[in-house]
Length: 407
Length: 140
Image (cartoon, rainbow over all chains, first blue to last red; front, side, top):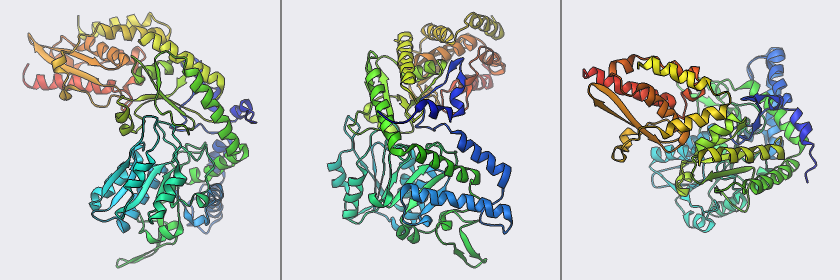
């Protein structure tokens, strides 16, 4: 049993008190975005009330305090993922932005015609398309690690894909569509054995599992603020200094510049080299509050509770007639994805919504995953620390009621 | 009946149901009454894009009027497209192109009109009107 007081935690999230379609909200779409605790909402409010000013520019007081607050977040992130240096933490718009940054900048410098990039069969579109784009641009090829029917990567196949042409491996830590926790440690070790760097998309992991980038020895790590109880529009790219220094900048303008003449521009140092333009300052500052919130609860406590909830949800949903779980990996985190015989996921999603229950339906921006299982999509319940067994009961009752109408 | 008379009748029908689940039961029922598209017409060119579920919509002209048949792999979507077919099918292209579909908002299905990828009622309406405009331009 976990030692968290979930009812007390729920009090921290004002939105959980609201009703939807005259029913108490049951929010089970946390894989898409999590709700925000009052401390995060307050941090955004406080920024605009007390310190609104652009960062890294002004000599005036407000600019200095907002810059300080923004940079506190960078160091908080550094601590949170145990990066060696704070300048290895690039503040981006989110996971997608982080991956695009690496695909573009690393790709421009290191990927040439005939090279190969490896992704997995369970990637979200944002960890497929940027690599497709750079592959097309450079004449390289995208290789895909296959997975089995349980939604687990075929590690032998992975090993056979690694070769002298491989330039980078990019896989998710936790699959948003299946909940699979991938053996990222092993993936990284195998790639490093032949000198290939690895990017880990931790968008669905960082809020559930303790991540230590030095211990993982990962080269790049991407995640989003809004999936970890923080604001939207802010995310992180962690990169090892040695790689980031070798990569050309991404976009031009703002903080990324040291000197500009019409003849030549010299670029700023890390991390500013990759932070063109005015960042999403209030989100950057409020991310600090989100990390504090997670730290206060304790990521291991969060994981223990969510694992308990996931086991309960799996067990209870198993009582639904005709249910088929998509993604039955041995190692899973916080996602339960399913279809029910004779029904379309969309129909179940619409009816659950009318009962106040928010789930995600469709292909979850992971179309290749759905193609492999030959389904149009799934119903996905994704959990957060504020969810309860009572909410799981409501979901199960809702699915039963919906399928009775549909079948 | 005119398009507006059909719309008004549907608004009345829906007002009868208080509970959302009952409204959706009614929509599902309407889906079952939908004039089904002939299997041979279930071709890619008749699939409406932008739907989370698949929708096929086939137009044809009979006696100077535009008729629609449709189908979907999801039953609520089938009900929604059925509503649209019920309202628009069997009228002239000119009437269909000019009509204001006020009933969708009035029966509380406005959320299905989201311009994003959610489910594509907007795409259905757009497609039906596009067919009507195309036939109108041909003078039918």
